[in-house]
Image (cartoon, rainbow, N blue to C red):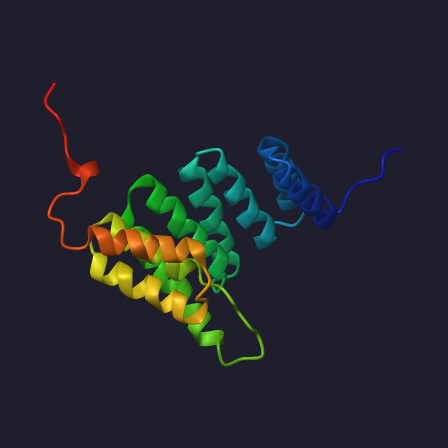
Length: 178
């Protein structure tokens, strides 16, 4: 007789599949874990990440929404939902999600919980750069670098934003006649 796995065990196995790049198997295990434990926000959020990796942004957003409904202060799901919106090209929604995640992080800054979570700030900077607001992008990247001066990814983002600042046209906005 096969032993029935707990929601937590399925979640852990889903993580292992995800880490190996087997997103379909991860989604299957997360889904089963959620059936057993419907308010399992970590499984909802991680299933969203797996869908996101597969390019299914709408399904990822649905899962992030469900995770946020269960745990409204889940800054990771808010940040990830922002990334999904940005990947869909909806930068206003992305920025709104990053702002909310940053407010949650700021709220907990003075508590015993130490949140070293700068992705939302970097991601918001990227969204600002994507809409051509280089001043705000530079502000966000510089804020991250004041906290983490050795962050090469953010330093590169800052350099790109600084180079693009002041340009009236961006190459990705150009359309060429047929």
